Image (tube, rainbow, N blue to C red; front, side, top):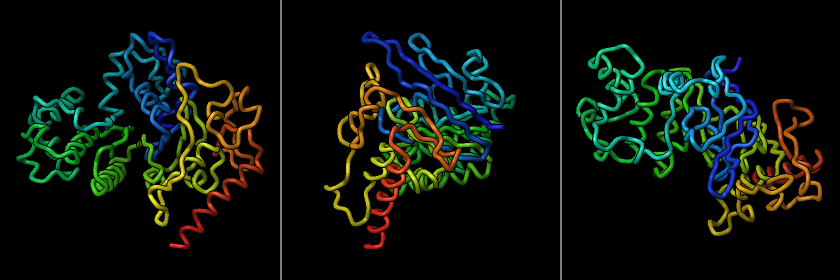
Length: 342
């Protein structure tokens, strides 16, 4: 049984201009101890998907449908009180911006202690000991002194480590990391990702990693969900997606990765812009930007179907199987040729 099983999740926002379909029929599952990567351009619905699962979207303007079953309990049907019990205890989230996610008027220690006492029946001294233990685990130097510092006294990388400590302080079963390396330098990014991996192994937590960086996903994920314009374009085991991608959008994402022998100014790109989710295109939502577009793409929304020889690998594209296999082989052949040349 999956730890989290999301089925046909939809999240619509009511605005003055109309209804924004921010998530439109997304399904995936994750087992305990696994890492699921959710990738796509900004505005594809990655973060909103996870905020919906956590019950953090503004209730007044939000309509959510479908199921998000966590340990046998549908989170979309849970009461606000029950969701508060689950958040920070069973499911925790590392938010995108460590600069604004911490309260600037309270010390790091105060905020970590509060995260414990909200969910556990322990004394403040016990909670402080747990906070100190986690700060040491995430690599905060001189943690005994720095626990009483304020957020502005920490660098961006150190603040992100504090956010990870706060997320893990109650040993959650599921950790959601929303662009955890945004605005960090490359060295700090690598340290943060390594830290999340190590702590996941220590606590046997499941991890959902939200990112636009396919390189990160290739490094740490077991499965991948590729999202485009609020829908799932392709999903499956990460090795299958990288070895045999079957959707033109996935080809575009992989083709735009920088490579060692490619000039920075000559990176491949996906033409056009993501569509407005107020008025998404008819048919396949990727068709206005797709170099393989056919007439059927403009009128019929493709189903998310398994690749012929692998039921775990699903894709939503009208192209025939032969074309998909040929283009995937061509793309990967380009990578292999460039790797050999370097």
